[in-house]
Length: 198
Ligand SMILES: [Fe+2]
Image (cartoon, rainbow, N blue to C red):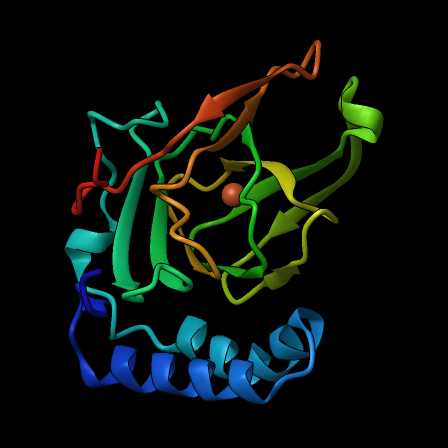
């Protein structure tokens, strides 16, 4: 096992991760942990200076299509926690996908529309919620609730969202869904800047 990877190794990131880890260790449940992390996450979303421009650029060779870039910023040695930036160019949207881990997701730059789906009994997808996100907006993912979604950039500028999730989201095999049939296919998004082991 490799150690912790601070791909973006700055005091802001180190302090944020240390705070998150202490909070998770003290929390009695994922929901409680998410609640307790909220102020820290809001502060990170509101700080315009800590995320270098290169992590706010799309990826023409994207594994997700649409020039979408997923930049790893931090990954725990045991792969139980990651912080990454998801960059979605104007007019692009992600596939409908799941995450298979709890955590927080929030918008840093630009605007997005998010559609959330439920899949009762593994059948057809039902769109249960649609919401417009502005910078600073964020929400908790607590699977299976709200774990399946799609995001689309609605701003003329690229959107950047921050994901703090309790798995190695870019490297685990998760699912992309066909909107019409609800059929799930194996999906691994990868990261622009870090390889997944084979
Ligand atoms: Fe997502």
